[in-house]
Image 1: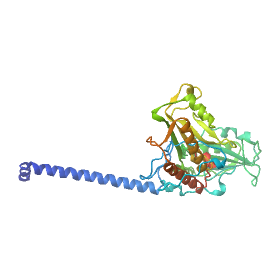
Image 2: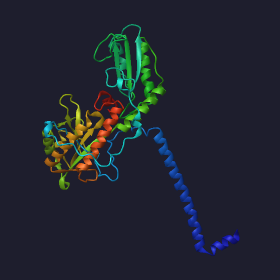
Image 3: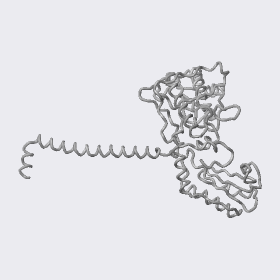
Length: 386
């Protein structure tokens, strides 16, 4: 051994080569372990449908293949209600397809129960109470006011064969009462503690009435909530179109407000301008500050901004593709009026090919929502994506 060491020491180049070989071996082992870890992680996420929605949900941006022009997820769409013959023809289909939605969207909410008045057991934890004698809505005031992690709804019906009615719309008396806890929304899934708290409130109500009831298992309901949340995470898409002032200029707040209101937008308490559907009052799209600072009547008097973003919340809009087509027309007109440019996140101008790719993703999301029996803009969608 000593002789070997003396031999190595007498040949510095050999010593260096051995050290380098040893380091290369160590690095190789570390890289191999890292690659194996990532492969296993991908397999796990694929098997279980991917991660759940984060507690704070940011706008999801469209993703195009590398050979497609970049499309801005911050695209903003303004709604145009001109006569149909004046509407610009549909965009040409993009050559390569937009990136596909993840496979978790294969879970479908039963169609027969969706968007009906009454309990929705496929997206809610539902507990039915059977009072010994009919009870008025006032008898349930305390449990209905309980602060819980997820939204709740309470229904009553005057007979087993009669329709459910919201307790806040009728006084009763009720032969049956249904307590419903939403299992998932944009803040995430209802966890086991959340479900247990809800069941505790219902149990107390049943004791006070008194009423017979059969509570579900809290763990099973929490598992259903996680599964529902994974589905919704893959369908939760918001699209934006950005308008930036030419030559890095600024848009005065007073001018912006005048232009926005002339286009049909109205300043909302949310800090953005909203375009509402006249018949229903539903928000079709919003006009937001590029600097991510809220607009207020006071701030607009002194504010200036480099641009604005038109946003469509796909799950919360009925007929998303039609709304997107109308939005792009308004975006182009606003860009011209404000002397701005319609751009992507890298400040590159958006052409019709890029807009067509975004439209394809809007269509794919709308189709996936309907296949999951969640009508875009319908009551279920508004609750799950609220």
